Length: 133
Image (cartoon, one colour):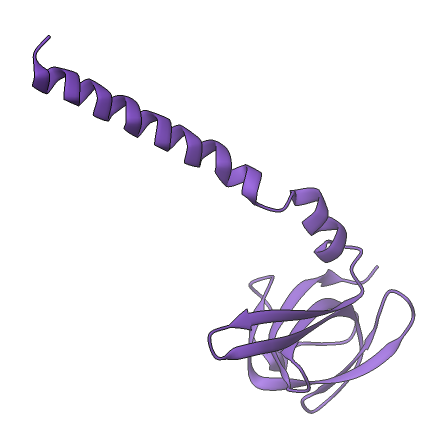
């Protein structure tokens, strides 16, 4: 075997080994899906999440509940533990969910939603999960 073929064989073997390591490691370094679902799945009531960023720490609040009242840009949610909380929503907040609800103005009572906001700021993201049963 010539020297260049031998080098190519070593290089190919090394590349396969490195590729296999990263393919197997990607799931090993991540948090298990069960843990993520336990904390942020359908049973989550509310959460405070601190995120490190280059500009400093960001404090995010997440609230899940059913809209019981709407007044201007304020909504009142009944959370799963029966707590009532009134939160402000940015009029330009992004709304995700069913295609028929695409803006803050279309939010209404009995919708089950998740609101995302930074600290004491108005919510900038609304996820519509459906109609409360």
